[in-house]
Length: 283
Image (cartoon, rainbow, N blue to C red; front, side):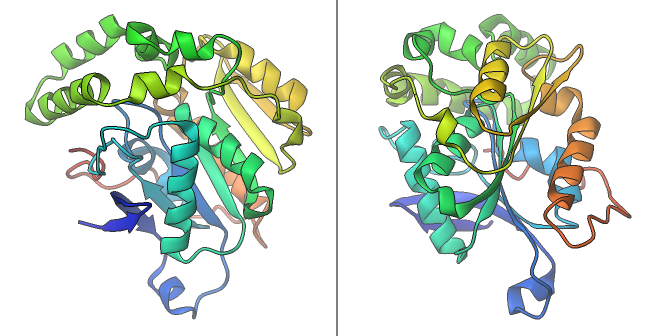
């Protein structure tokens, strides 16, 4: 099971790239880091949707964020800044010195934006799906059951999902999620996040996708208005779960996006997600 030590924690990671890329004999390819959402999410949401297709054209790095999947769950340290520091340390462990393309889904978008603001020279582009970021009142909205609702994880919907899909693995996921919410500083840390005022300082190419039925559609409009040159796409009939609801469309857009940064933009032989088996990010 692949793990790396970074920033004092043990992270579960998956790296998708050709064998010759590790030896330096392959051609230089873009580096893509994909960051997932909160609580019941992990790297498998990328692995089973678009990661394998993107890996045909770029080196793809997946990670279970702290507290998620098979990564360590410390009692404290869940601020956006903590996650940015984790990403800094992971890039060092992966030996990535040049700019990376950050793909962020939901909370992963928060971390991606914050990293791009802190390290503008280390980000080649942002590809954001239903990205959150702190606005006035965002912290309070993150507390308790509202914390789940804010990230598209409505409490009743979660219970329905678990009831319909209850098995041994999902039971473990539910128990881990409960421990994450109840026994760590996650909610307090998010509640303390201050609103950001630096979106206009993001200077890398940015593509953002949101569902027309998303509960954070106002964030989409704010990104478009404040991030210079941000390209926004609103997908009709989709919710905050856009990545899974329209994975084929997201995959197509992601390949088009990364193709802008490669020599050919070739998309021949593009497959779907990963192959069946144990979910690599599930605990």
